[in-house]
Image (tube, rainbow, N blue to C red; front, top):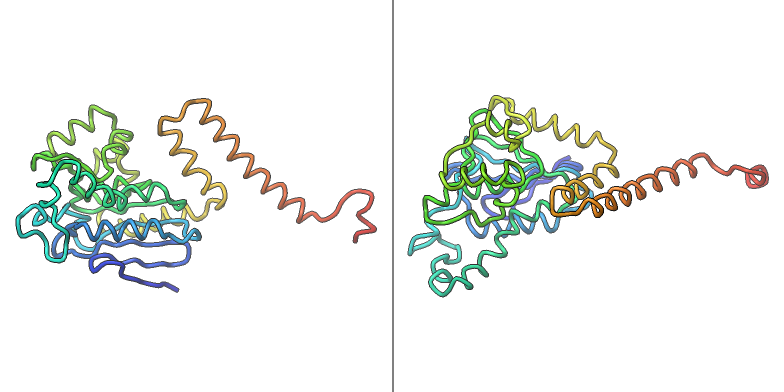
Length: 276
């Protein structure tokens, strides 16, 4: 049984058991993104039910997301949205403070216990690319076009995408992708680690579902320990710190397993007959 909600006019959230699908659904505008959408994404992530094991980020239409609604950068702005020009005109500090809560719509997915999978087709530009980078895993259609186009506007990526991009492809490749604004296609995305697999567009949903099923098939306690453990390994954690994290995670898992098995085995020892 599924349950669907709309935390934003252009965002559809569907819960099916342990799987939550978060869908951008403004296909006529190539799922252009706005500040209110970013706040809605952050709210979904930060209020995620701990029983959810997998989140799928995806989008309706031929493109995942063409990036921000560029009307945000015009004097008229976007109807119903806060002005981006006012804080920019006020001071660099005011603009930075304005951006901070919007970044959570992209970075909060790293903090949830669930494994986050992005299913990406067509254009994933700027904010679209950065939303995909906010996921733990990416499955892409063979027509995918990842691109950071901020530099062409005289800007830089500012929605949490720089660190995961550098972590995945390395500094030099990340710099080249961002400064040129060129598109990264499916084959390069898989070869560079940006995507786990690329498939024909009509197979994207089924391939994503297969990956979700494989994640759910893993024992839940181990799967929940793995995400933070590997994220720490990818960060600045020292070797000694990472070794400690590994043994602490294993200690929790083994303790739970042994305790459960002992409970299932029932009483043993010389007093067992008396307790039966």
